[in-house]
Length: 158
Image 1 (cartoon, rainbow, N blue to C red):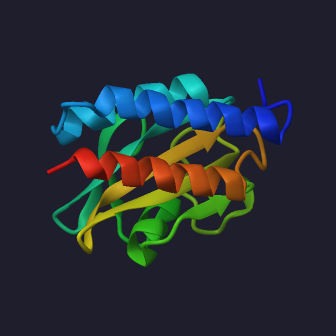
Image 2: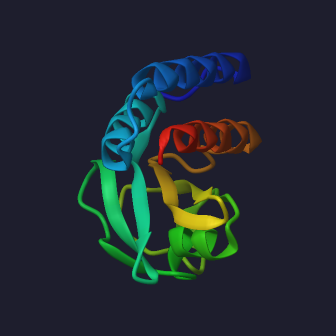
Image 3: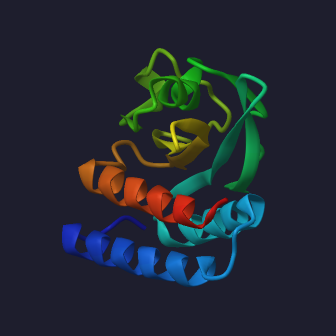
């Protein structure tokens, strides 16, 4: 199931932000927030094979709460799309993971990926990683809304 059009996609993202804010009210525990957040993303975004978080610890990214199949547990900074986004502290969109030179294959059904770094007070917390079964699933609208989504999450984390 893909989006029918950009209006449908925007409406889904607007609802996603409202739902996430309701789930966050009164909660400050990072793991609880990320667990519910990954479930909400997985339920909302079409063609999702992985929606989850890698947390920065001991100079690497460690698998955190997620929805999807088994995944890589340790990712060095600069390695793979997650490590690259974390190191650069920039959102990365990969239209076709099969042609991306720095891609780490964790799930053979993934075809495109978006990774949003999570930074609070100049400290790297981790990354949001979302993979799709379709090539070219993510665009500037996804980047904008998912960056807003992460900013919303970080408002509630101590």
